Image 1 (cartoon, helix red, strand yellow):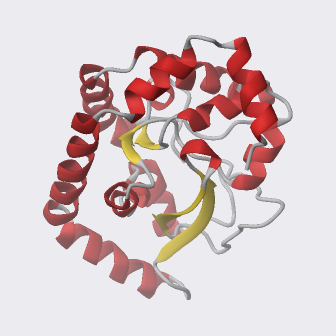
Image 2 (image 1 turned 90 degrees about the horizontal axis):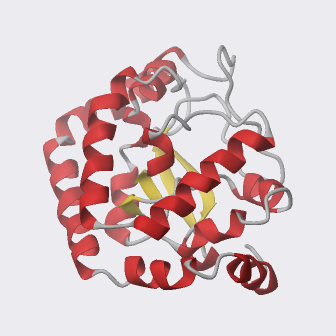
Length: 220
């Protein structure tokens, strides 16, 4: 969780962001879209979600759902849900990012990750209010601590609810962040999203996500 001092210092360097974040977080329309969108997705996709659950259990030992702590709005910690795609379930002081050809990823998990189906259980997080359909993508807490110490504006991502998808992801900044510069570019897009947020921007991001999801070469 970021310190209050770190957040205040970052906001002082970005004085336009606080008002924009309040407008975004206070939108009832955005919350209604989140609720109805998540409900529709869970109901419409229920047969596929059930099938994936069974296939994961048949492929390898362990539960079908992967749980990991993430940092949400205002730096509050929540538990994110994903379909299990790996043979490990890291959630400690050190979390190793997945890489291309990672031996920890199961065969089925590879398909789920490339198609983004592994992210669909996060519709439950959206219903619970931990996340929004659109917002800055949440990272493992271990990564938040590392990048928060490297990128001064990193903590400002927590001024908005994390999203199932985001402006950074549809702008080519998806997948692993092998160096700090890649994460800094992602953070820039996240802050741009907060500054320029509108319902129409959310809808454009959702449409681009639906189009790009199964074909994005950066997903692995």
